[in-house]
Image (cartoon, rainbow, N blue to C red; front, side, top):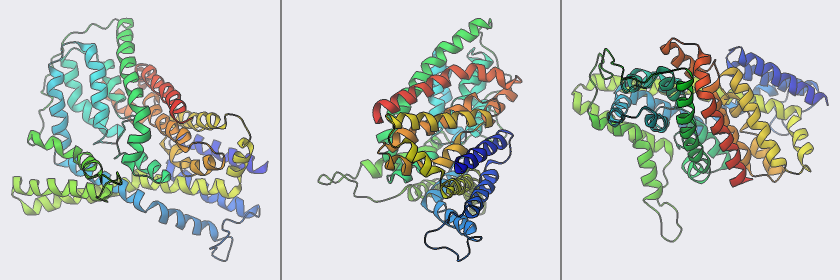
Length: 460
């Protein structure tokens, strides 16, 4: 009983501090160490084998183990993807892609037909720019003026942009990489076999909900749609856009991933004859534009200097994501060492419908803390490590619990008034974050509902 009290107390404290905008990774890391020491003081050994020889030093040995494990292929993959995105942004490839997508959008005259189209196109852009806030900044600077010039109301355009980085089924997503590693498969296999079955129908449902809800809210607020002339062109920048064919560079890893995994299938084994990982594919995808930049600009020194942004992006990936995974991993080790995971597993072992209970429990936790703190990803990373252990002991499909929690954690961000993406859009429109949340709420909760239903249908 004391284990449950301690664990629940720490979960409440951690959730409260994250909600108060304390750094999630620091809170999780320190909480993990504290839980490990609480375990030691309760006479529960952290290691059965491989101890330092002193129970008081074992928590730091566990921290080292977590660092070593998370800095492996998953951590490296995430860092390389961040580096790739940073370089693509610098050479203007992301801007070129948005510019290419903006051209057909300008030709669509119906404002409300634009809503689902822009929503789905914006989510597709998440494949090349995974940061929700970063994507919102880019789209508010480039796509928002196009939507306003087409006659779309500011709040409708803002709401669509605020929900563009949600649950895109991309093998390049850091959360997809993490889940796939836990399942022992590649991120492409995870996306194609599990994620896309749920996320694509959910995105389509959200697109329809957006159309109906934005039209209702515009009518309710008496919005009149008239073309709005933007004083400056959306493409007008201090620096000119690169050639339009640069728009292919951001999606090159996805193209190569599909080619290597689907284009070299052995007819007998039905498996790819090329064994290449996402890190290698991303490195290939960044070397090609680097040489093209060198040829196009003819400045060797500057091209080499620009490529350094790849490594700076890797550092950002460690700071923003990998460090959070490490901290969350240590927190989970603390919960495991104190025994609460075993208690949870044993208590649900003989319960009918334990899979649905676990699904709702973990998804609900991600939704609650995500709404309060602006991100459910910290909660997701905290528990993705132990979800396979719990589900295997209870004979429950791991995907049934992990997938809806992952999707809920990503979706809930767009209805939290303290989320960075909401604040970016609200500050640009000079309105309260609550006004944006009112516009995003129905589409987001529609997405969450569809994700839960389909996850249970396919994997329950």
